[in-house]
Length: 554
Image 1 (cartoon, rainbow, N blue to C red):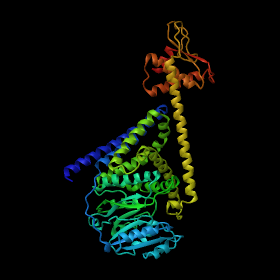
Image 2 (cartoon, rainbow, N blue to C red):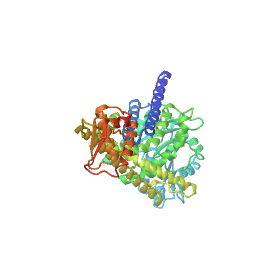
Image 3 (cartoon, rainbow, N blue to C red):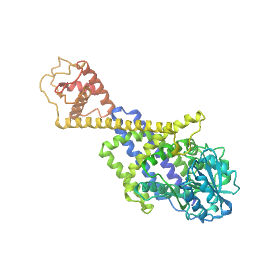
Image 4 (cartoon, rainbow, N blue to C red):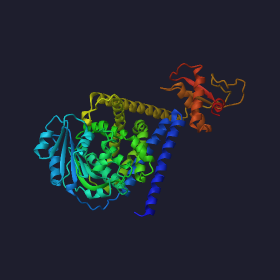
């Protein structure tokens, strides 16, 4: 890539980054300076802008992602394969067989990480070296233990349920780069599996391929990754050892190294086992993926401001921080989004249309329903990401007590499940509350609109009768003024009566275009009414003069 083209691309990303920051500042400022009455409206605007930003970033990555023409060669004598396995008797055999078939001359080591099933016996029967740990130390510790037992300069890390099949393991690329990522896809052809397959494929074929051009891939999947041994050894003291986000942390630490040479993607497909149902997917995200994202916030911050960070990686770091910071606003926006077709339809339409871009770029591999229902899948990820935050928080407190934490997400203890369930219920309760609130606001607006349409007030051409509570009333005034008689309806309170009076006045004379001024006027009129009325009965009549309303709305 020429220097001029590189500078042009850097300029594009700088502008996009500035736009994201500006959008965030404007939106948050609106939430702060606007009164509560307009809060729900701004939430609606926010969710459209926020999800549109997500889609636009995806579209940009789709349009500018290109396959690199690498020459791939494998030197099996310099390669060692490390497989950390825990209770993997159902999958370890196929993993070992596919690895031996693809790499017959490479050293293969299975680290039996405290398994209580037949994992160790199966691995030994298949003729590979087995290192057995009595206690479940976790994937990271198991890998670190095995690293000290190998001398080969290149390491292929595999999960115990990953199958290489015919993928080429390009050890020659490690002469120029620190690590290599692969295109990892899940097994299964059901619609549920296709959602995950589309997600995995999009991550690799769009996101990682986009970053690979500048060797700035941010995450090598834990299912399969190729590394220089010296890079992994340097991380033994730096890596936190937590299972959640261990692959993301391992990759980010490479980029934060003293002299990083970067991470690239090769378009070689390997397969892994994904969750089979919604419960397993929920557990994977809440106990595994999303706590891992929170684990690496500090690394994203470092990358965002480090001088040597490639522009694309810096942009991704800022975007990740933006997403995390605005997740709670996205969540409380959802009930409002689904309470109005005027908000829901544009959101669904834009999101689906933007999803079609990577779908076509990837040659329509999955069912079109995956694209049409992509917004629902995104909402699921949003909700689980927020619940995952509380799981991460619980683990941080647990870590302070130096207690051992079960490693894989399938071993989440009863307290983690309790925390996840409790905050899951609270989050859904918040969504219901916001839904009711937005519905009430919508109904109130409809009542006012209907009132304005029917002009539910009358003009009396005689001496005025002012609101009895008004301190501005003057019984000696002989001018003729327009009067507004508000008849109470079902559900009306004093504040709604005041709001209707303001709407009627503005319908004739305009003014009070600022929401803050209208809110202050509503409070003042309501306070005046409270001096004479405890409650409102259906059919009660409230009379307001033009002069009184004009003085309040000035």
